[in-house]
Amino acid sequence: VLIQTVQPFEGQKPGTSGLRKKTAVFRSPGYLESYVQSVFDAIGGVAGKTMVLGGDGRFFAAEAAQTILRMAAANGAARAIVGQGALLSTPAASHLIRLRGADFGIVLSASHNPGGPEGDFGVKLNLGNGGPAPEGVTEAIHALSRTIDRYRTLATDDIDLSATGATTLGAMTVEIVDPVADYADLMAGLFDFAAIRALFARGFRMRFDAMNAVTGPYAREILERRLGAAPGTVVNAVPLSDFGGLHPDPNPTWAADLVALMNAPGAPDFAAASDGDGDRHMILGPGVYVSPSDSFAVLAANAHLAPGYARGLAGVARSMPTSSAVDRVAAALGIECHETPTGWKFFGTLLDAGRATLCGEESFGAGSDHVREKDGLWAVLLWLDILAARGEGVAAVMEDHWRRFGRTWYSRHDYEALPQAVADRVIDGLRRQLAELPGRTVCGLTVTGADDFAYVDPVDGTATAGQGLRVRLSDEARFVLRLSGTGTEGATLRLYLERHGDDWHGEVQDRLAEVAAAAEEIAGIRRLTGRAGPHVVT
Ligand code: VG1
Ligand code: CO
Figure 1 (cartoon, rainbow, N blue to C red):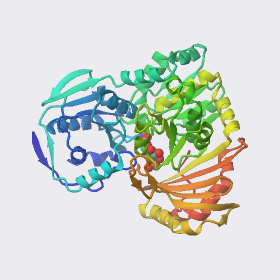
Figure 2 (cartoon, rainbow, N blue to C red; figure 1 turned 90 degrees about the vertical axis):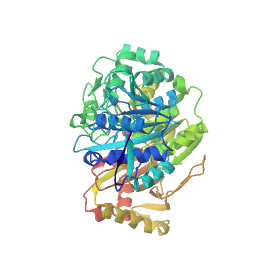
Figure 3 (cartoon, rainbow, N blue to C red; figure 1 turned 135 degrees about the vertical axis):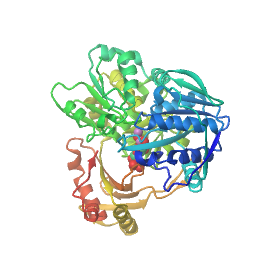
Figure 4 (cartoon, rainbow, N blue to C red; figure 1 turned 180 degrees about the vertical axis):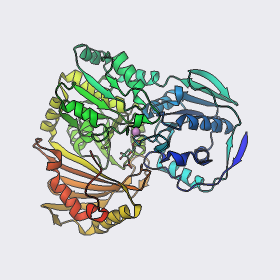
């Protein structure tokens, strides 16, 4: 065992989902090692423990996996379970941790951020329940990273991760597993594969865009092999280290080709895309884009149609900026509905306690208690199961949903790569107004409440403050403003717009125009940033 000295690095503070930095930062000598040793120390050491390791296959992941394996062995870990080729989607890693009773897992991914030498890299930490490390642990990692002065490693050659099987590294057993098989089996146990197979056999056509990221092998195995979708259903199916130059974020901006396909004559019946690490999903039908908040609400309203959820749901949970569409479903079902801060780590206690069966976020994330992460392919398969059971297409399912529950018009406007000081000025400016806003009428809407979202976990009592500024408006409207915690360049402001109505016809941005105008009048995002408009609209 080698003890190497290292100096602490600034800013090794995990954000919404792991530590994300420019790849070049992660490649600076000692940077990854310093962080990983802080992770190991923050979880009480890894001696005798079992680790799951994988990632989305992005540039530097293969090298980082070797570094982490050497360090785990040097720190006394008993076993590492590694996805073949160092691949594991985030939900598959979560499943593997639970299935194998591992103590923790590391996922090498910056999720939907682009990869490559000029792109982003990231390290996610999941604990023994399969879920992202909660804030107490991420704070401990950050604290340790500020004083770290040494790390432990071995002087060994790289091990071959390209074939499945067992080997050793020092005294640690390394087990290289098929990244797909266990996950595919889990899906087969939740959904009616025979019904979905029959749907494809009847000529149902689908396109799944894996965006050259990790879901390709999973989607091919499940959709094309096990469910009989036509060969070629999965496109961009081979994980590439730079995602083929794509930005693996499944939204109308970055998956514009898929949206265009679905808006053209001859579109298939159904389309979906996932992100770098496989935890997000976008759903499309011919001429229909399903907003993520609506997708989550539809899944909650129809989950009982899938065998895995036939008993019904214990409860649901959504992140605060996610639309209230699912709240209306929960009310109709008579189940608990929780509102949590942004990020999957806040759902863990509710899932573990059996108080939420389904969880969702407006950022194309939905999942259930089958793992402790959001899960892109899971959402796609639940959609397929629902379409098969109902014998209807996406448009019909959406219309029926809006007829029953009304429509929650929703959109997120992202202002990216702002100077931090400018973004802070916008946030501080709105925060200072919160107390005096109620009662004010702006652009025809009256402010009915305004606050800085704080959360007390109903299971373990942990308090979290400063999670986003909410302004409630008349006419069942609201806007929310918060700073992103996943970016690597400057600051990103997210403005979330929402309004509920019974009439579901019309264009989303039109229906939200007054809410957007009120938000601009109050928060002055364009005025203070000098930007003409958002970079990305979802
Ligand atoms: C964003 C999303 C959030 C999601 C997070 C991680 O965070 O808004 O809902 O949980 O990304 O997604 P932020 O702080 O930038 O708004 V991914 O697919 O890994 O890790
Ligand atoms: Co992701």
